[in-house]
Length: 272
Length: 315
Image 1 (cartoon, rainbow over the protein chains, first blue to last red):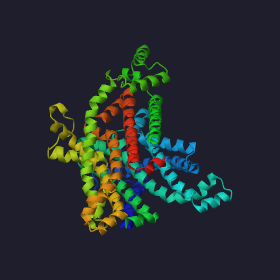
Image 2 (image 1 turned 90 degrees about the horizontal axis):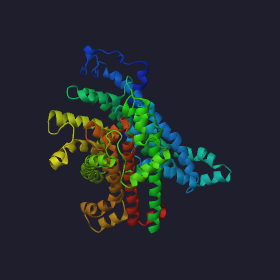
Image 3 (image 1 turned 30 degrees about the horizontal axis):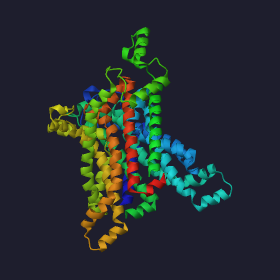
Image 4 (image 1 turned 135 degrees about the horizontal axis):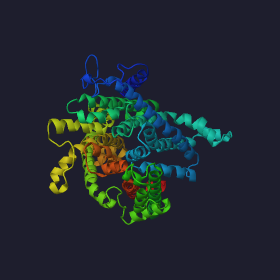
């Protein structure tokens, strides 16, 4: 059953990634061309997912929107990963030291902030746009990765092979890079998929309130915001971008679950 | 025990101080002067300077920070730049929307999650479990503001059971007010209920594998009796933690839902204040939310230490 979730999750995620990649080379219609006579069409043979209030092809917008969503979420996860993991590993090398305490208490502090409010604060004060959305979402990924890597690294530092590496004269930095990191990589991949799906939701939320990706670049959240006033007579405008978000997040979550089961046999055993 | 509480209390105060510095700094370094923003692009230099002086923006940053913090300690959150009314009054007014909304959402989420989680745990590995788990995967993946839109279309526009937005004040009848909070609360509750069901399920499954459960079974208790009398009570600890965390999340996380339903809550207040550069309102409300989260965490930590002595040694 669990490998099913990995396969299903992988397929759904692959579908979104392929749509995003294909959009670089080809989309069914040019979305910069407005065609008012074709506006608000329901799905049909020409426009598979219908058209919006400007007569733009929704399938094309969804494909380019996938690119935006994935890019923002990947970069936001990247910020969390590249800052959070070294901090977590550093904290683990000197357990209970001032460094460890400082890093972990700062993490606790970031956790205490209402992330959505702060993300809205950052994007609104520093200017709405994809880049500030990436930073705003990314900041809250830092403590997550720091905590996961510290927790996993701490247990590894007690292991004999780490002791052996120490005896052979390797520095803490080298041990962290050469032995600890490869051993916690699985865990970080799983956490990465979860944060990735949360990033997609956060980007959609920010774009929905007008603080994420700015027009004319299509984004799923923005499409939903545009749909809001027309949803009573053109429900497909809301249903399609919403479904795109759900498929992506569902795919990533299922993949995360499947990967965790695959990579961590203890979880597999406790679930069976 | 006292030492532990003292240690946690010091950490609480340090966290609050740091949080106030961070919030103040973020708002301070942001581009855009509130006085120029309020007066528009055609304002004269001297008018802007006069307004800056009136708002206290001409003082140095450090003294402004200290007057903000000392005011908050006394319950004075300053005066809104835009509305010229005390921020504390605005918060008091809005909290009567946000707080009931959060509690309502939490109630719905718990009502869904408990039976769903318990059912899934008892049906572990069977079709019922798979159905509940599949549904929760969907629940987590659905953006709540999208779900809110769909609820509005179905229950407000088509069936006309609820209004599409707005809030009926409490003075006009509690039931009417609750009715206006129902759709927003359902929209907020969906992802929370999904998370809580999963936590409930795994906590119960873990408890059911404990030795004392086996002992109870061996003594002749039926499966249901064991779940209700022994397992559930012990499985509640992690579930209550998540409920505590969800409450603070719901207080702050309602910001987009309040936008969708035009609810005059704290989230909408912050959102409007941000767009109007009403920095004092932004700082104060965000600080209040952070204060709520940090304090809830502190209470949970201390409550755990009271219940479970092992935790005291860990910190």
